Image (cartoon, rainbow, N blue to C red; front, top):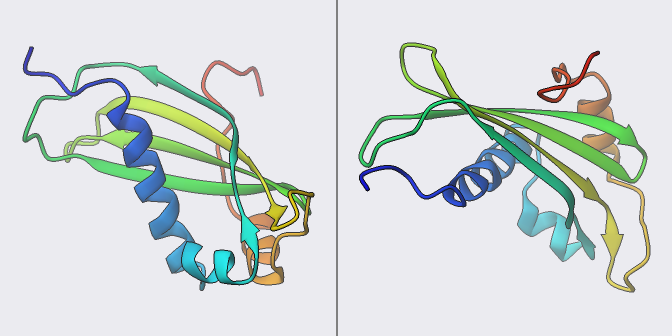
Length: 125
């Protein structure tokens, strides 16, 4: 059909999250080495316009601390002209190797407690 498959947006969101964590001073690999995972507990995407194959796109990612063990990320898939093709949101829980909730590392709690994250699409806040 010449347009990007809808589920690929979630792959782009994951790449955006990974890059954001790196800019905040850590990596997923380091979190996992410390016995911490961040499974997705909620995900959504609102598609505004189709993206075409081989089209240049930018994924803008922001994070926000919801609690010491929960974090949310918002995403905007944009074209170089600033038009938005899609907006999304994922929510994650910090889980230890034992499968129980665990506090996020201090660097992440501090960075995301001051991060500017817009309200999820469709919300009234």
